[in-house]
Length: 265
Image 1 (tube, helix red, strand yellow):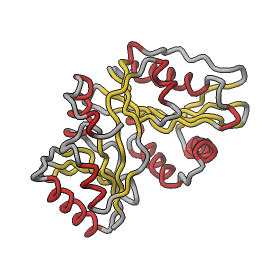
Image 2 (tube, rainbow, N blue to C red; image 1 turned 90 degrees about the vertical axis):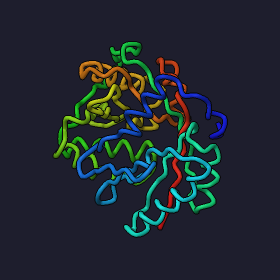
Image 3 (cartoon, rainbow, N blue to C red; image 1 turned 180 degrees about the vertical axis):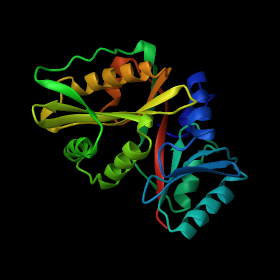
Image 4 (spheres, rainbow, N blue to C red; image 1 turned 90 degrees about the horizontal axis):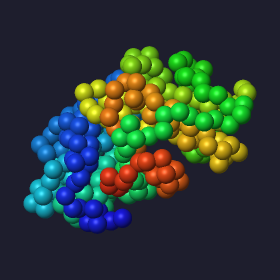
């Protein structure tokens, strides 16, 4: 889906998502700050944490200057950053302008959401598999074992983020690992956004040898139950092509798509 293909009027849920999680965003963890610069909102994570432009309200007349200002700002800081572009953002050629300015597009993701009340909240696990809450460093290490096996990427920066979150703001997330005996086979977390209607799903990954057994689906139901107990109305997720069909079958709907555009100073 191209940016222009979704440039129509946002749905009410998408408009609420834009307002609460982008335009009026709050820091989503410890050692994180949100800055507003003109018509741009950016998040900066310390010590290599995720740093990105998360909202912009630009026109054809203002876009190039705003892009140049962000490039200059982060280059001065010596920071790699991401412009998280959504398909309905303006102007409609913003993707091309970012590419011309030296940004590199990463894989497209589908932004999906569901009302918590519409989701299954009673997980059904295969025999011999159980959910274990992650509350300490040992649990984070089990989570990262799943991450490395599921995604094949270096998750060291995620490990540091999760440890900091547990130590400094444990009430902003609930992490869970699925165990088969002593082996971690699936892991994920739900992030809470206080003052909004949204909780969000992150990190869902399953060991390749354990896929197709319903563990990922059960972990979504488990997190939907957690979100319900915390009083959230919606669950939101940036879905990969692999998880999108599962989420659709469970009741999630597509709001838009998002493409990260990264810039290396």
